[in-house]
Amino acid sequence: MKNRKVVSKIAVLTSGGDSPGMNAAIRAVVRTASHFNLECYGVMEGYNGLIHDDFVRMGPRAVKHIINQGGTILKSARSPEFRTREARAEAHKNLDKYGIDGLVCIGGDGTFTGAKIFGEEYDTRVIGIPGTIDNDIFGTDNTIGYDTALNTAVDAIDKIRDTATSHNRVFFVEVMGRDAGFIALNSGVASGALDILIPERTDSLEEMFKTFRKAHKTGKSSSIVVVAESEKLGGVYDLAKATGEEFPDFDIRVTVLGHIQRGGSPSCADRVLASRLGFGAVEGLLRGENKVMAGLRSGKLVFTPIAEAIKKRHEIDEELLKISEVLAM
Image 1 (tube, rainbow, N blue to C red):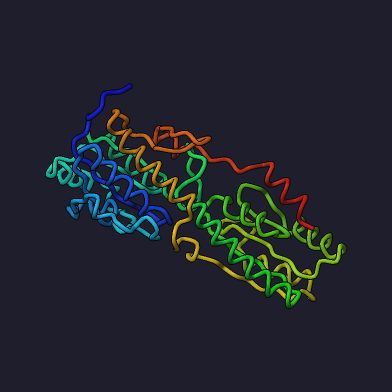
Image 2: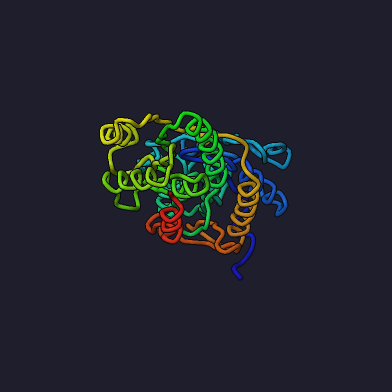
């Protein structure tokens, strides 16, 4: 066991794309800090707030009634300025001004890249909490916001299926996920999609057309195709156009779910995950952890070096891919 109380004051920030459950994580960090008699500051607008001295002292009452709120009360931003050594020096100067020696960074791989560099340059201890709907961070089974985004996507696709069935239509539905297909694969299986196109797999138009022909032979009159936004065949509109040229009798529609997947009240799973990781991050700092990410694997809190969390990939479930193909008919 590492020595406790290696930090005396901490700060927490959210950076990059927002995800449901970030507020629950902020709440957990602030209240855990209070439990251990640590001063806690919130940093507004991510790394921009570090650079421009936008800090606010936070206690237990500052985070009341936020566990169920989407977004982040600390605001979020991407900070190109933080990529410069001069800006990071200013950020460190501001942390020193408040006597802050521990920093909790909630976000995805861009956030963690900034935290890694900053932690290597200065003596401030840094710890990451994975907050991104994409679920593409290594070192944790799920990232904060993924479960909520997944449920939002499934709910939307279920509604789209109602109109697809009513009019014998084919819908191409694009979901978010950046360079990862976790939302597409899981929402596609959960909503009974005919086909699921993800960047982790090499797809072809002919394979998709073959799936349509097979479904037609079984009497299927309406279909849903779920497409990850970074799928490599050319984008959801190109796919719809190519399908229309191959099957001129199809009544085809396109729906892009977009940022609706980022919003909304976090699910129970995301609230619990955020609470566990927020608590774990503060405990990790007290134990002397540094330049690591707090994650949950097989129900247990683990710490993964930030460099490893960024470099390695969270692998797609090959068995689930096979299941999606077997059940699509």
